[in-house]
Image 1: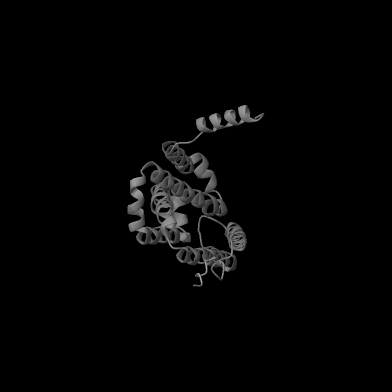
Image 2: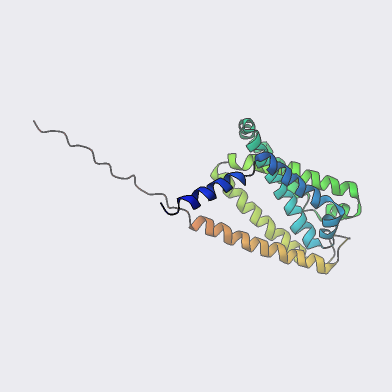
Length: 219
């Protein structure tokens, strides 16, 4: 075949560029450190929108990536994750709700020890448990959690938009309203993604396919 050498070339380079679970662990760990260090972390905390909408979200993503890479590196832990999936999900949801409180954002800006606690808890108590628990949940439970996450985005966005006073002492009303608009927009994108995901799914047949069975012989 004319394209056989090119195909072998691509396959050999794809094998060389394959990222191992240990390398993924190192990469997500490096991202976590970068989000905590004063350079990038300090820049993201300058605005309420980038603090909650970018840094907090990326810390959860880093924890999720760490969790998936750890399961790939140690597959024997999959059974443990399946056994404790509900407890892990409750820990993740509780941690996320805690760090959506405005007062804790203030403390994370003013006190370095609280900021370190924020980083560790979002990575280890939100993203990582979410990575271990989510694939083990039933589809119905995943749907309920999707709807609750969407409602929370719009609920918190409306709170930050409608509040006449500052909820975070470290940020002004303009920052607060920007965060509210960002959360509402994120909720809209999330809702569109959920709708697209549902609509592109294959419909379940209402009837089982007809199977041709041989007729009994007439004697």
